[in-house]
Amino acid sequence: MANFDGWATDDAVRRETAEAFVADPGRVGRHYLDRYLAFATSGTTGRPAVFLHDRDAVNVYIALMLARRLRR
Image 1: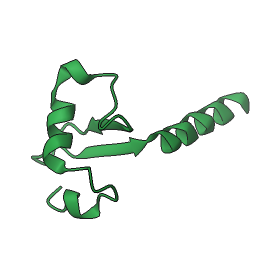
Image 2: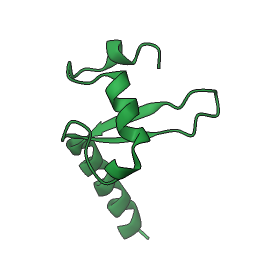
Image 3: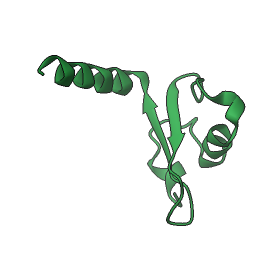
């Protein structure tokens, strides 16, 4: 998390605002910066990690889940 701002590929993404976003229960179901699905780990290492996924990535995850279910 210390290098979050450095590895983010979108210049608008910042650790401080992403952490504030996932910490606000009123934002559940909304997209961070109107384009990223955001979630955090429980922080068992001492600090929660924040993960951001764009809509294309989420669509791939959904397609993969559906494909796995259809194979059964």
